[in-house]
Length: 392
Ligand code: B12
Ligand code: SF4
Ligand code: SF4
Figure 1 (cartoon, rainbow, N blue to C red):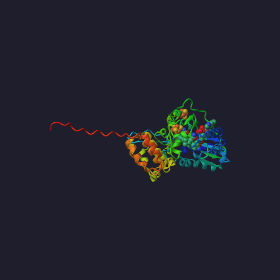
Figure 2 (cartoon, helix red, strand yellow):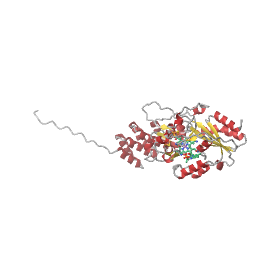
Figure 3 (cartoon, helix red, strand yellow):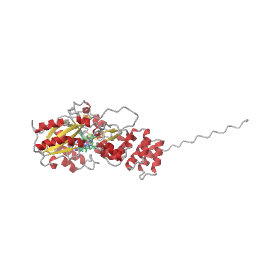
Figure 4 (tube, rainbow, N blue to C red):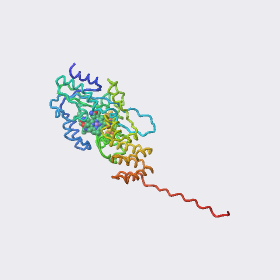
């Protein structure tokens, strides 16, 4: 067997669901598309994104001049688990990719034996996972792993899109694989299901409308017009994947169950929202260190939890939200006020009125009080009239 076959065999043993080879030539078309979308503002809101990043990401030799080939890899994660039985508690939703330990660490460890094989054969080898400057989906598509779906994700035949993508850029000359000639055909289920209209055309996503952006990447207050569209998502969004028929097929047997078991460590896809609202800094750190959810920090997660509670609309959440009006983070306090305004009612109004005088920036409390509607003062019942005078 040659080096390419050895790598593929070892990748399968390490739990990768697919491995393919492409050349280190620039991703010309994908780079042009990404640059155009960036210039059109479709990637606005991400301070770490830039036209320069796209140019570098579309040309592996900009970072690794000796590069000849890319080993593109797909590592499966579990599809969203079934709904828990109703227990009367208000729950949010977490995207399936975030249910286990942070995948950046897992994938780096899984790729290490492959880079070692390349180095021992005398070649350079550099790994990329997600935050590396490389267009992961373009690399995977050109290496024949799958096709780019209308929801913009890479779909693997027989596997679907619940996979992480990563690459090894190497100086080894490896025989490239051919891209697949597959497409979504007439299906457009993902475009129709997206609650924010973020998929503005097939395969084109407007970052500023995507729930995944607002709940994971965005720092600061969430715009008022976006909040109601977020539903009960507190971290990421899977709607355009859940609806995808390619994800609905039963997956072929996994070659190695171990990596999937690793992802079962934190199966909290439907967390109880009031429990999350009760997390202080140390509790947040204990619960989410080493998880992808760490990225939002405590403030971002609690902000999202408030939005979800406001959207679910169960007035039994009023006491927990009222307690959050005293949170040390002003953005969390503001979103708790918004949620109380959405829930409305006398109790919500009472707590907002009590909080507003102490609030340094009363904007959200003011708005929430307006949303609660005018205070209805019921006329006092008329005193019973004295009995008419009559014989004693
Ligand atoms: C920025 C980013 C985001 C942003 C912006 C999304 C976006 N449009 O890019 C936000 C935060 C919204 C996001 C959300 C999600 N993300 Co994200 N994200 C990325 C990241 C870091 C860069 C993606 C990128 O290049 N964007 C640039 C824009 C302009 O690309 P684009 O519009 O999709 O165009 C690309 C393709 O369409 C293609 N293309 C376009 N035209 C043409 C034409 C031809 C001929 C060809 C060949 C290619 C081509 O080229 C372009 C550049 O790659 C990648 C990791 C990486 N380094 O690549 C992960 C990545 C894409 N994300 C991933 C995941 C899992 C998600 C979420 C599912 C998470 C979640 N559950 O909440 C959601 C899915 C939302 C969605 N429907 O896409 C995975 C996708 C895995 C897969 N199976 O495809 C990646 C690859 C991370 C990883 N390493 O596993 N993400
Ligand atoms: S992740 Fe959610 S908000 Fe983003 S495009 Fe998909 S369905 Fe729309
Ligand atoms: S839902 Fe349909 S259109 Fe969207 S990615 Fe899946 S197959 Fe393609």
